[in-house]
Image 1: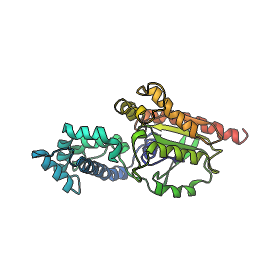
Image 2: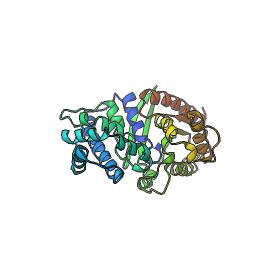
Image 3: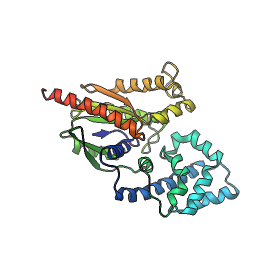
Image 4: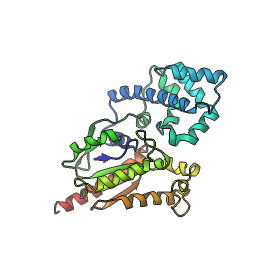
Length: 309
């Protein structure tokens, strides 16, 4: 099972498994994500503009572009041009950079804005990278079945938002292992459902509850510390020390910062089986393939051991 809080990267990882082990995406996937990406782009820019409020004085052409985007319901070519023009404004980018923890928009938003014009083309066909970056809230339960080196795997993805978690109970039977994803960059962000709760704290609490539960305590557990690329850049602008003053050492150094986050999850782990840890980037196909091969070996080896082999 793929578990974790919302926006940790579970669905992106599942997409990678389709790319690596199931010959990529179908025609229907491309058609579906065409509209998803257009909506991601438009809604993200609308949210950013609203957040700016009085922080930026939109005037002249910039004001026209702002109104065009706010009034839009679809990402037409004209609206996309306005999105691109707004993203060229340095003040807007500064607001984005300084407030990403409060914006509640996808971390891939800059990618959407930079590709807005391309997204809006009538004959636009998403690339694999586009689809991997598309943000679509997972509701309910979905699974992906594939074979790797003679072993059949079924990866089950469930919604990570609080309202979705009660549906997980239907998946507890016959689970061989859990893969828990957490987003490293969320150390200074709050939940969409509850802006008073820190996302990393929520992830740690959920990790403790899951690994200590009667269903999962004896199952192999794989921890993916995801979005390492964003985390590495973010700690330079928003030092981890500001949010965890008790931490020791140079937390602007990636390895030390990663070690600190790992220690938090190690302390929260309540399982009885071995805990496997990997720092990952779900957008990096090569990284996902390498990591999952290691996961496969660990899970199969432990499962065979538990079966008396």
